[in-house]
Length: 286
Length: 286
DNA sequence: AACAATTACGGAATCCGTAAAAATT
DNA sequence: AATTTTTACGGATTCCGTAATTGTT
Image (cartoon, rainbow over all chains, first blue to last red; front, side, top):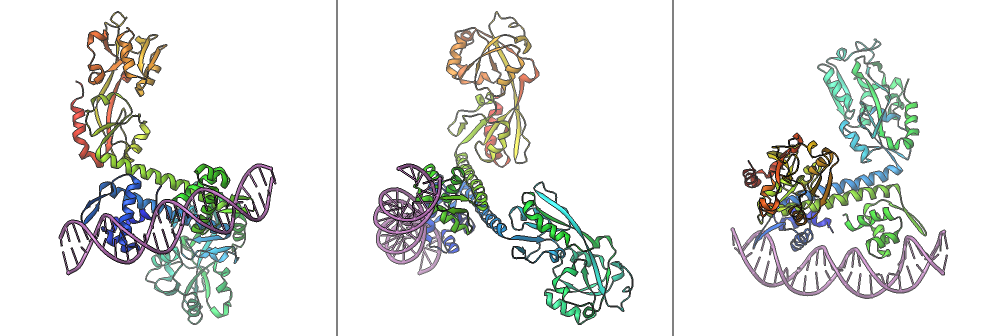
């Protein structure tokens, strides 16, 4: 029978090199480590250490065992979080996203939670299978046999300009038109962040971490800022009257400013998720 | 911290369905299982069971946990055997094969052992990485970035015919020539077995499991049997004088009867194995 | 009545920390 | 002298089995 705490002792010994340091790292006494490693050798039935009177080191077998033990420990850790995540997913629908826009359409209910961190595109498959999230928005389709990627609609980037700004009276503008301007920008806007930085020449960006501070700044200045067709559903923006903002909203006509939004979920969970997805889809603007 | 014995209880409960049967299967008392599963829920921090007064069953989370636990248990088991095999490989060179012929060339030394079972072609990569064997003969090259497949030579199948048999005076014979005959055959001859059964029409085979019995039969009968160019190195055959056998050895000229032999090993172990491989290669007939 | 799960209690195994010993640098 | 490993001893935890209890079929 295998003992977990002994595997931990082995891996930390492999890192530290002495029993004393191992004990210190694990907050146990050093004789415990001595006994532990003796027991592990006994359990495995192989020699893991070369012992001299005052010195102990791993044999080649011991080094292999330490590597394998580390793998096993991480495997058990991920298993545990997977189970705990799955259990949570039985009571809540955890929603993740690579892009913040669609979150404004998520209904505010007790059984629906929104993950705090963005998820990278490459992490979507992993996040779903480990039940870190059960529903993930993305701007790309995910190709995976266990995952369904459903197209929801587009998010259209808009710029909000002071009425006296050049271009404010046009029906649309291009990134090129905005060259050289200064914008107030929320920090966490996913792929939009890179896009505006790359595609608007010589622009300046004043990043805001705090949502309320952002609102205050745009209320009491005439600086331009970005929204999208999904922002109108945003609780924060809904409180503001158009007069308070005193801007003209102009869509951006570059093709990349019209971003397709997909929702991704495990096929196996489709049935439970369908009502929520339909609700979000029905609320999609225009 | 995770406890192994509890994972075992969980997986057997998933199989048996009741705590009583679980206890019986594990040779412990039933209250132990009750407490064990309570502790596991405590450790995981999730509800694994639905309990009614007299009935207990897994929740969906519990079923997931049972599946994951089983994976973890097999992973730890394979890890353990891998370590033990590796340790053994530090003291012995374990030799596996898909075909028995090359084993006659393996020197008889204390630090060289021969695996009892044949290894399937598809299992070679796995057997090497788990150190089940450190040197494996095969009749095909293995394509794997961590494995080196070195060509050693050919094994040429021969048939040993009574001198009065038709074809006994020819320099070579074909499988077709042997149609309808009856042969004494050792049971464990790997791919040769299928080949002679498939390629010799209407032949009869009298299979022998025991080597000594096989020798006795061919000594005291005139039945034909198969050998190869590697058999002359075989300890058993070396004891026999040609007169005792009283057969004429004729090579088989079908192309498949000339089988290429490769030796496979982990590239990482090449240095230690090279002397042994060179020794085998040097002993290869003609 | 038979079966299944839980709870209560005492014993046994084991894991830990303290203290002391042995050996090296 | 300082450091590191090992051994010895006593205490605490915990895991187990027996026995009794509750509830269902």
